[in-house]
Length: 356
Image 1 (cartoon, helix red, strand yellow):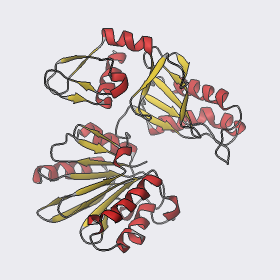
Image 2: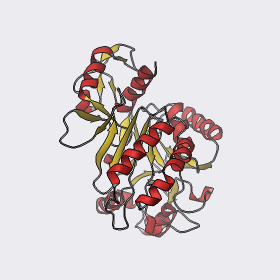
Image 3: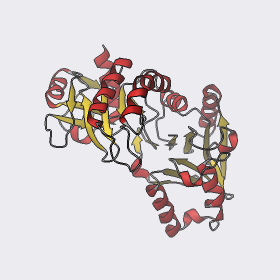
Image 4: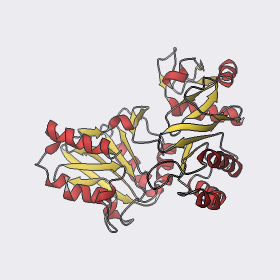
């Protein structure tokens, strides 16, 4: 998975989110920033305390700098300092990647390492100032479902495939793995038999090991070799949802998707926890938040939630009613100080209220 965080000087980045990003992506962290015409790259942190100590030190020392942070989970290559991000690009820039470019991977070096050494370092000097080359890099990012961040010695940074990530409290995140609200449950197998054999054991080990206290679980069904759904996928996914919720009582909702259509199929209402079919024509529920990390909720439950729940503005502390527009924008606006709370900030409060 990995996650990249871009923190401009005005951005707010909490220790809680850094710690979770490190815990979920624990195969090495790094950071880069620029000051006075010089780019600094520090990487190879395998313990959070040391990482956070260095990050806090540099934040105090360079308060006006933009920081780019990367937390790695190894999908290819060895777990070592050499494969940690950011990577030096030519003499004046650093590069971070979130995603997988499997054709570039080998046993020793990660796909990103090879992309930098075999592709980016072969480009003309200062290529990031050239629009045509940037367009090609953008296309490479989108076609591989990746996100790239490049920073040069002036502190200027470029986010390729920016729309695949999100902005929160003035910081950009390449995905939501820095939160404790979601976990993607991997595919079980390619046939009904292999899925049934591994289902319960997979639930007991994989979910609990990767996320001790997940709030939202996303289940991905098994596919056949040609990418279509395996036999009896509806029945198996219902079984998977029931097993996941039984194994992880802390989960308030389960979102089940079909890989070959990316369309929700079965879900559990966040508020009443009743299982419901998630069909595009079903008007009895809606989905709040992003695809991964979002929740499904009945219309009637949302109306109940609106009538009895108030959230607090994280800036001024004022009470905020949940507006009907929340189901469309996933944002809540404070009329007292004009602060906008995004989806994750609101969901954290909703979970706390639910558990009380």
